[in-house]
Image (cartoon, rainbow, N blue to C red; front, side, top):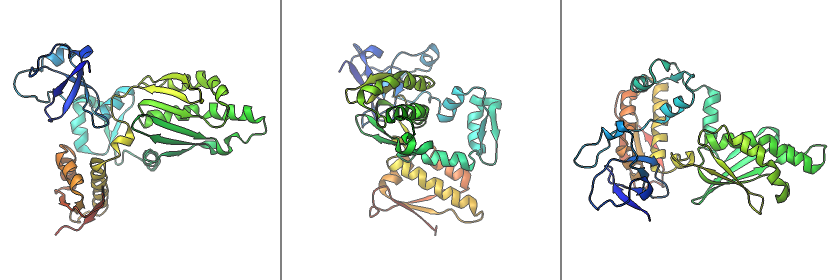
Length: 321
């Protein structure tokens, strides 16, 4: 496999390619590594031993240990927009981020207004409605992400059908690129544009490449297949949104968020109990941040009640005794 498996402090294994420092390592040796790509598909994270001098200074001896966490989502987003203020409605989070972001942080009553909250919620849905009657359908699979474009009434113009379809597809390419970026789709992406013969779709390659050019992940348009599908390769570093929103941990975070919103909306009420599947309870207990944040913001811990009789990923908020 041209690499080595490395046991990390979490007990999981990461993969260190020979090209990233894994060549010739004897079994049982210790070394410093940095995660370069998130885990996926049941496989551990990708690692590199190519470290900066500052990172090498952290390395000591002893058992495997996490030496430094990488930047979180807020820090990464702030780095992409260095002139923008960072609006937070959680004083605790503001205190944690202030050493990295300094005076850019501003405390506000609500970081998300209704419009932003609606856009965020829409990212959990596989279908995106676009102006003019067109829509995108996003379908992740283990091998690739397929995006289908349905022009709907967007091509119902008075001009010739071919010109109308070309114009409609060209007009929605910026929205397509934006959805790829917002959802952090990565790896192989195939796009089936609406209408148009397969041979004519390649004429949109310059427009699609231009729409992708603003993406800091630097996706590449590889071309069009014989079936007319646009092939895009977008590097994977962090998990795509659909993976973050799936599984027991995501269900547990959704339950905590719902419970906290209900509690903050009715001050004075007792913190609820969370009856959930054992998988959700285990995922929350293994989270080093979520339950502490809940306790800090709610003023009391939340009681977890594992219930194996519940359907997969199901949870119920109940009154505390």
